[in-house]
Image 1 (cartoon, helix red, strand yellow):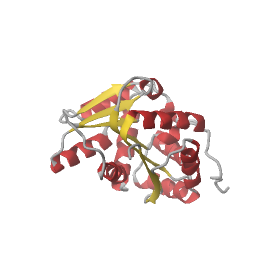
Image 2 (tube, helix red, strand yellow; image 1 turned 120 degrees about the vertical axis):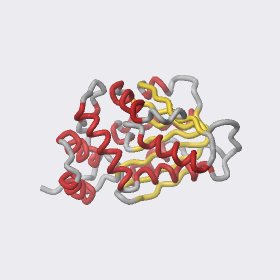
Image 3 (cartoon, helix red, strand yellow; image 1 turned 30 degrees about the vertical axis):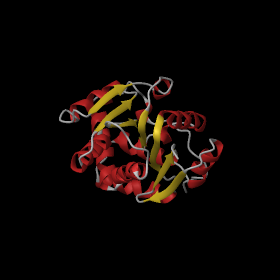
Image 4 (spheres, helix red, strand yellow; image 1 turned 135 degrees about the vertical axis):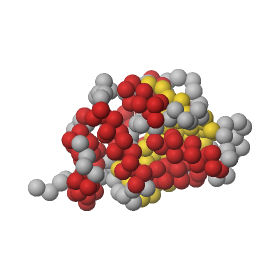
Length: 239
């Protein structure tokens, strides 16, 4: 039976359980990070950060970046490595609602003093009076329903001085069937396989992202399709 990608799926993912823990979760987090890196996903987010920094207002002190839904911290470590090579100072904060995931990310980032982690509900965190230079959201936005996405995006705009970068899945039948093949190649566990397929069906089409932008009256943004079936959505909050 053909997959219908007309509308975003409302099916839950196993990883949506914030009490989830154990070796299966660790394996899933590591496999997601590995595949994301291998297929260029980290580069999409990193280039988004660099785009926001071009021509931006001068930053005093360390560049402060929040990564929402940080997983095992791989994206933050990628940014930290790039910052070290480029010679600029940064303060990186990873946020996730799963305490076990945060603990694992801390372990994986023991050699990165510039990275700190926080277990928190993002909606509650965005009610606090914290400001970041840039907010990142990689492979996380699709976990939320449309009404919650609008609330999140409003919070991202309010709390980011320069802007935010969304890197998320293109809802596509081709992507769905290609991921089935990847499951075999990378020997993904049952949770990773099931969640991955649902994630694609909960992903986005360009019109979805444009509709969010119009609803929230974003004036300065770009939406670009990237391999492998990703969208890079950069929203500037300055200028």
